[in-house]
Image (cartoon, rainbow, N blue to C red; front, side):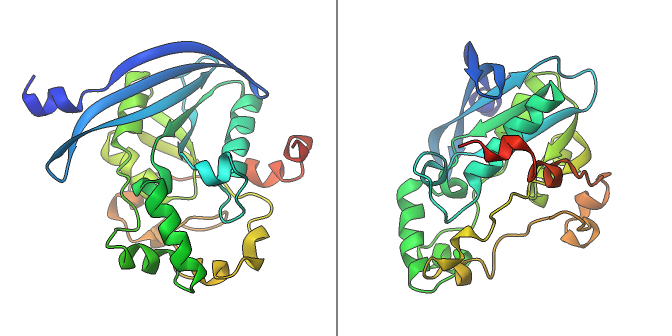
Length: 245
């Protein structure tokens, strides 16, 4: 194995039982050394695994950490409801995987994300705020989640996502997305009253919502992926699980 491959190889560093209100998961912790902008760094991610996986297309959610939304209850995003929805869908399926990446603010980090929020309060949209800070709108490449899925023996997935970049990344990694489960949640506009937030959403990154087509996503590899819209997320809005605190 060459030096570059050694740096980028993933390592499983922990495996433990992880009881949640959605069921008893198995949590696997992974890390890998990589290079970014010529500097060595370490990427980490968790995989929450439920039931038997890999024998048929597995229900999968790739989720990025959001401390402000998931721990502090921010209404600027719907990260926490999307996380809870994904875990509920996996629980109802009886099997699936949630990969939780340490990629706060789409990879820019917590402090940079808060600085971008400050600029959004002044009227900039998400992309403009990142550009003002000299940052890209999204630094995630989803290589680590793809490697984790391959490590788990998963080659075909039903992906819970609105993000065409995730579908494209899985296709590049040789993981076939046989269906896309839209991840739309009730209360997407809860934060519309926050100053600067409506404008901040005017020019978001590309998203695929229920009923949308992948053909117009502008990504050649997406056109080669068979994507099937699934109504499960829509039905979840009216389920008793959604009303839990």
